[in-house]
Length: 315
Image 1 (cartoon, rainbow, N blue to C red):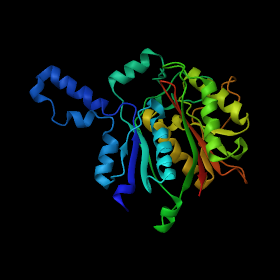
Image 2 (cartoon, one colour):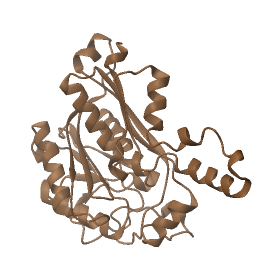
Image 3 (cartoon, rainbow, N blue to C red):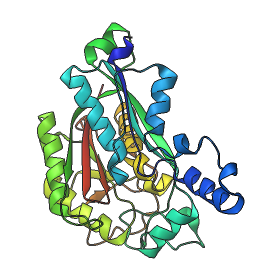
Image 4 (cartoon, rainbow, N blue to C red):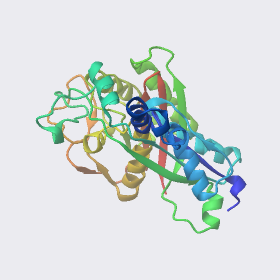
């Protein structure tokens, strides 16, 4: 492919924070001459996008949306816009974070966002469950290859699905607290951009991290847009919360669910929170009903009022 029309968009919430902390400890313990010469390139939040572009020879731009836990989903929205605008033929897009360290854990603990179910860690992450008490911090990545349909068919690519629409908004409300009105807004804008109605969506992959307040507010927002009957899942019971990688991983999950007709369930739900009036898929997998709408919606929300939503359709 033409390297000038090949781009990368990979988002991250914290970038190389672990490397930063490690080198800061080295500086304090051993002095500046022991600090790694790779310190700066490891701490850069744009590092993942930069390394992928270098490795693959992508010269159409290497972008890094930094929008907390919405970063990965926002990257896919940006990538789709690059394709639709004609600025690129192919874009590698996704999100990544590696933030399981003492500082991040302590920070989230101080605001009581993490589960304290340490005696039963495999059951600690329980989105929408009435007994949820916080999320489980995880790390990882989700990455997809986007390209125009014309370009994909010309090279004989196996098309897994399409980004039919997407939206990115800012709540302008609070640095931490979510605003369900704005969550409704971003979902509706994503539907509008795809030219679809709520009834065209077969299921929703909620952001639902397993926090008591966050899941309830998102549940209200989903209900307001889709009603109480649309199937809803959150795979953070399986994976924990990948922060900047969460929305991109959710997009991969939705693609696979549309391909197979099987949606992974919301793990560890014993009793759905009575304040969450949703059709939450429980158990490990759920087979979509015959004739289901071949589209899924992904939510991703981050501190700072960052909101992103993706509409993905099957191939």
